[in-house]
Length: 325
Image 1 (cartoon, one colour):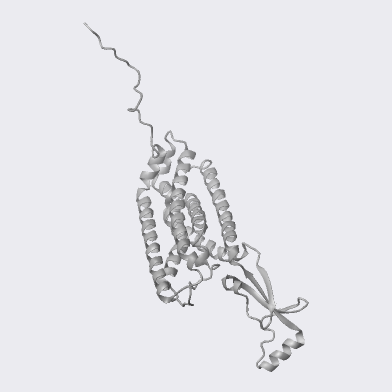
Image 2 (tube, rainbow, N blue to C red; image 1 turned 60 degrees about the vertical axis):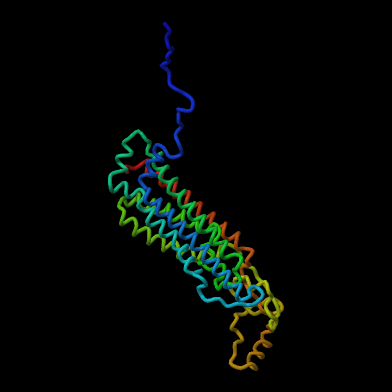
């Protein structure tokens, strides 16, 4: 008689599966917000497809017009360029209002937060999973759209009507869509956590986002030091100023004294010439931002916004671990 040896120990090898990326509290957060994830993913794909298509249409139009060999005058919204820049400009606000504000406020309003925090999962771990999951989705979506819009705009910037320091270009290219979206989404999460109700949180987040956008329009022009350039009064402006953004201009004397641009704007040419001679005006003086300053200005602005994002995220974790949800 033969006997079969049996072991009572746990099986090892291929049958033992290690947990995947989505497990535990990460899986819970992803399943809870799966509708929002699918909507953001679909919107990202749709936006990417629109940018690729409209860029192709605009390139075909420019080829037909003979650009860059000929000067062309595109319409004010060539192939939906301003429409797409407007969508990207509004995207941080939409993410803050519809994704950030309800993220924790919805759990507080429905009692889910109280239920989760009474389980074995530490509150800080649950909050960290919510924040990381939400902000990761925002990061990927806005980085893709921002990169594609930059790919659309940068090679054809000279043919497009918008200046690069305007919000529709500056805030929609490079790292700016991502930085603005992360900041406003995180602020929306904090506002929702403090107000504990979804609808009021969304309203306050919208108003807060509008205030941030207004303040940012003032900060944008202070992210670098403007340059000064002086050239003779009756000479043509140099070619490099074509891509520059003028912030101010004066007329000046040989010893550097400046006068306002309209100082000698007299009614007759004779009176104008007499005024110029009387004041000793010989130069144009322009204050401007050069196009080569744009990347540094964008990364400086993005750094400020990402620093603010980190501060708000730390506040969320600190507040939630010391106050009942």
